[in-house]
Image 1 (cartoon, rainbow, N blue to C red):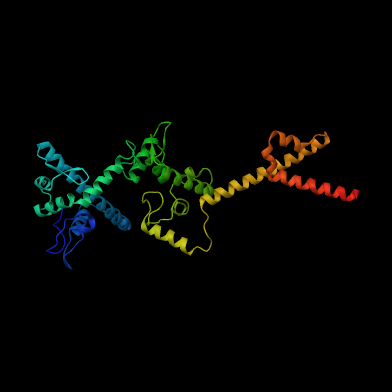
Image 2: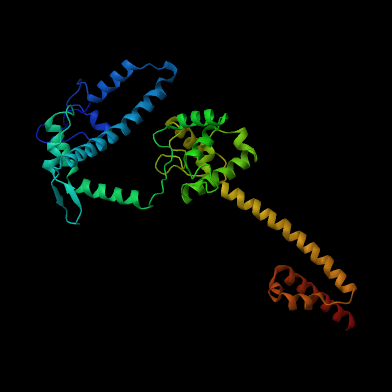
Length: 343
């Protein structure tokens, strides 16, 4: 249901988004948005305990639906003009070809609002700002050739989870569902996450979950942990979590941000934990190598072999290592003590 144009009498404009559906010329006037929501809940029912979540889900779907509807109506109008062979075109300053405003107005679909609303909508589609944005979006979609970054299609995360459970006989959880929708070449040896940026965020989340719940976390904790995502993968610069595609409610996000602000102890990131583990491992390896070096030096001295000469001839760059410098300083101190005794 496409409503009448909105705005004051002398400056009417087309309805372009769901927020425009909520426009009211005065207090107490029933808006197009309220009519749609009322009709929806007349046709469907919801458990009162889940009403808040259902209202939020409906709001999000209607926001997406309005954009999708307008895009489909514009594409359908162009398709009708091409089918009739009656689509005059015009060329903009950058050499791009577009259907004329008059042609789009003549292709009004039956039952789609009023002729005034359709005309204003066609004028919007033919504006320089809209055409520039449309052309930029087209280039962005073609930038990666046939590579598709969003693999879930129109199926929601809940539906995808149910589909995978029926297909494999095992519930993948929200974590497995999210990973499935972001994988390319699924079921082949070339399977990979759709982009390097997303792959890096998944690696950070995996490291943080392993640190928190152990190596078998995907089996024991299959649900996405919003707090760990917030700390390891993204700090919600625009109110969104780094990964998860809005799988968490606004209430959960507010709680996470509140815990972050009022926490008495700073929360370490997954990267910091990983660097600490690597540093500890390197220190252990270094101690082990120094111990082996001491043993080899002792054996070389008993056999009358000069260990330093052999090492410098085989690997001269090792002479600058911390261990070599330490041993050289020790030898110099020993020689100094021996000379003092002789004197």
